[in-house]
Amino acid sequence: MIRVAVDALGGDRAPGEIVAGARDAASDSIQPILFGPRGLDTSGLELVETTQEIEMDEKPADAVRAKPDSSLVAACRAVAEGRADAVLSAGNTGAMLAASLLELRRLRGVYRPAIAIPLPARRGPSVLLDAGATADARPEHLLQFGHMGAVFAQEILQIPNPEVRLLSIGEEPEKGNQLTLEAHALLAAGDLNFAGNVESRELLNGAADVVVTDGFTGNVCLKLMEGTVKTLLEALRDEITTTRRGKFGGLLIRPAARELRRRLDPDTYGGAYLLGLRRLAVIAHGNSSRRAIANAIRIAARGVEHDVVGRLAQRLSERVVESARPETPTRP
Image (cartoon, rainbow, N blue to C red; front, side, top):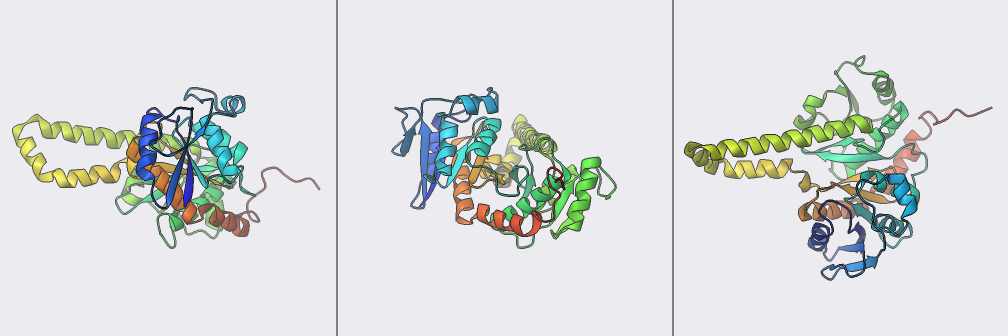
C-alpha cells in the first residue's frame, strides 16, 4: 500500500475537488491521507488534523516558517518522518518548494530542485524541466536537470535511452545566452544522450524525450503552451457551433476532437514531480479538478513504485557529483 499525503486545503478548488480526487484515486494499492482542519468531510479517507492554512498569495518562505501546522507543511513533514511515501499539493508552489526543502531536503550533491512537467507531444510524451523551481539557474544546474529528466523519462515514460535537448533560440550550438552556451558545453561533454539545442516551437511536436531549461524560461514556456492549447480548442468549439453546417461537421469529428482534447488536457497527468529531493513530492496545478488530483496522486504512487528518488540518487552519485563544478570554489 502506497500512502500519499495530500494537502486538502491547497488549490483554488480546495477542499471539495481535492477530497473528491483523493477518493477517486483510492484503491487497494493507493491510500491517500488528507491533511486539513477538524470536521473536514473526507468521504471515509484518513484525516490528519491541522490548524493552519497557507494562502496562495502569501510569501512562501515566511508562510512556511510561520505556519508549521499548516496542511501543506504537515503533509511534507509526514513524508519526511516516514508516515507517508509521497506528498501532493495544488497550493502555493513557492510554499511547496520551501516546505519540501525544509522537511524533505535535497539529495546529496543536488544543487537545485527542478519541476518536471510531462508534455503531450505528437510523437509521444516528453518531459520539460525546470518548469519553475529554479528561476536563476547556472550551467551545472542544467546539467543535473538533464540527468533528472533522463531518470523521469526512463522510469515514468518508459523510454529506454531518452534523448535530451537544451531549449534555446536556435538549433546551432553557438545560439543562446551565456547560460545556454555554457550549459550546452557541459551537456555535450557528459554521458547523456544529448542531441543539441531545440527551439520552443518544436515542443508540442515532440522535440525530444527530455527538454532542459532554467525555471524562469520553463515556466513562461509552459504557461504559453497551456494558454495556446486552451484558446485553440475553445476557438474550434466556437466555430463548430456557429453554423448548422459546422454543427453537422462537428458531429463527424467529435470522437477525434475528444481524443485530442484528452491528450492535450493537463489534467491527464495532473501533477509534476519536484525532483532532487530525498523524498517524493508532486505539485499540482492551482486550478486542478478532481480528475487532475486523482491522476496526480496516481503519478505520485507510480513514482514511489518505480523508486524515482532512489534511481535519481544513484545516477547523480555515479555520474554527476564528481564531474559537475562545485557550487562554490574550494579553498586550498
